[in-house]
Image (cartoon, rainbow, N blue to C red; front, side, top):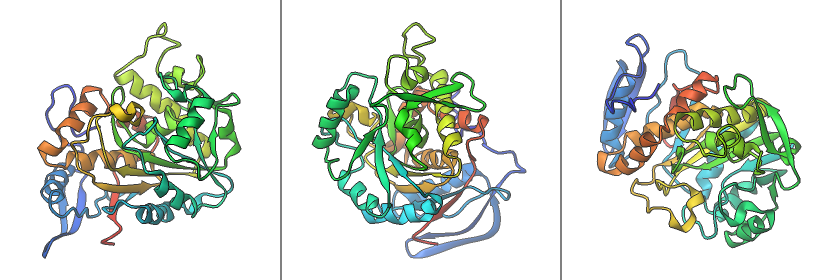
Length: 358
């Protein structure tokens, strides 16, 4: 359940009074506020964090008593920070490791910089950057155009596997509502583990693009009856691109197939930087970001990392979050989170750990 009711645009408590969070220590600049064993709810957490985020962002660890999900946070946004975050969550990855990210449209201004990814990949043995061709109008609709775009954007330091270049495969999605067998790039089956490296931002159709969308739309094959067409509803709605809650549910179906396939061998990093209201698929036409950079998150829990990303954006001052939150709520993007929860794809309550304060 979201903190913001998209129908009434009013805030409501996320948890019942019996389900609360603990706060131990806030540290802001030169003073501390200690509240040992004080019970606070999530709304209070966001209100308090909002007071901190504008000057010296420090996110203390909050968790429901019986919660197990952990989300690591670093204010530092750099290749060195990416490496630190990966080492916190990537210990269970082995074998052939896929690094799934959005490599961008030609000259895309907001993507995770390719030199940063190069430094990260140097720390991950037997890893390969993976992508799929796209369904919308773009040079990346074809493998030839996609490879030319990869060169333009600096992805020439390593092989990039366009996973649907040679066909597709089907994966079952347990508990799916719409897409019970998801069509993915065939080469996905060549990998034992996956790092999902996501530039977190807004999205014209999805409201926001986080880790869930990265592995759903991002791993779907691009053919006329492929996984991307499945998720966009083209096969069930006479070629019409669906929007709203059904799109979010379909994306959750697709992502569930990916998480089912990799099991515990999949981890997530969200980079909250250059967060335009538009996706990286907009390329150079993407709107200039109005939200500030926040930091990097990492987790082994898909729902928790996307939920934490949304919570940190909500905690921004009104003037800084307005455009991005309007895009998210107007497209029913928060339905992504509840759809993941319904499919048991993680926890919407989590312990947020600032690695610089731990």
